[in-house]
Length: 390
Image (cartoon, rainbow, N blue to C red; front, top):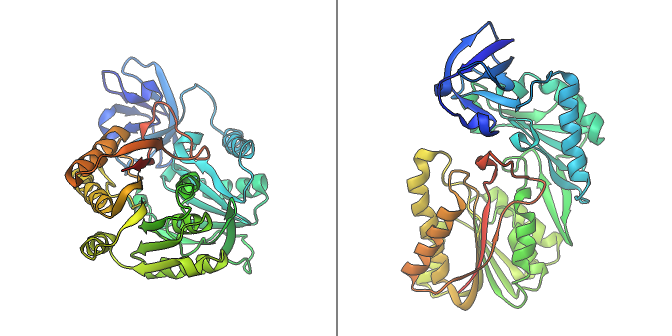
């Protein structure tokens, strides 16, 4: 096994972080192929961890363990079993995250369950080269017959991997890719083949329920609605009217079907369009709401994009605050891992100041327990959700 020697000084990997960047490496001793296991040591030769290497990636080594232990098939199976058993201890519904990459000690591997389907993303070379083994191990562990590979994420290109998607070999050819899942008493269609990322944003499920508690009797605005998750939760909870805004025509179509599925189509209106533009238009038309929900995509996909992202987050929060009645509620989120919670809070505070509104933060929420946060790996704490009152 090749030995990766770190440069002098203290590195995050020595505090439990699972990444070793190219610039942190002094030398590599021994031969290796891309995706092979390597041992990482500090500049004095002391053991730091063991993981897989990718010479094409800025994240040169993704650590699987910080213990001097053998990484073999049994190791991978044990990690998968631990992830599965963790979820089984608290999750009873048919849709949840089975594997959350580094947080489960499986860097680059994301697996979501939707009924009979496992939707799998192999976002790093080390798991890509072991994909067939992982597919069969997950099938055996979960009893799910269908495995859909959603490897169409642009991040794969940073690993030197092509984008692709489709059912894994061995998946029953007649298994429908659209399935119905439940979130509490809300029923939702999920399309594992055509939906964004793995098909549905499971990480907001508890925040959708929390926002719905504010909805009875309210006029609700749901911006960046996708397939209507927040909107339908609000309508089911008793909102008198919901306006949902979404840029994707495909997502708007499925959101309307979800509203029909839940018997709330008469109180939900879905509008296709750019949320920035439509929020401005709604303000010009003097529209007002009792509850505004913002669940935008990640504006900052890199640290270099953070400055522009901050402007975007501030603008949408400012627009939403202008649209709220006095005493109204704002539920606002960011899923950008490069935006830390305190900075996000500052962005919302800046929007409140510019809007001339006094805003109380009632709850600072995050991701659910099937998306666990790994201490020492701040990137795993990516979802921020504030419930505010004006």
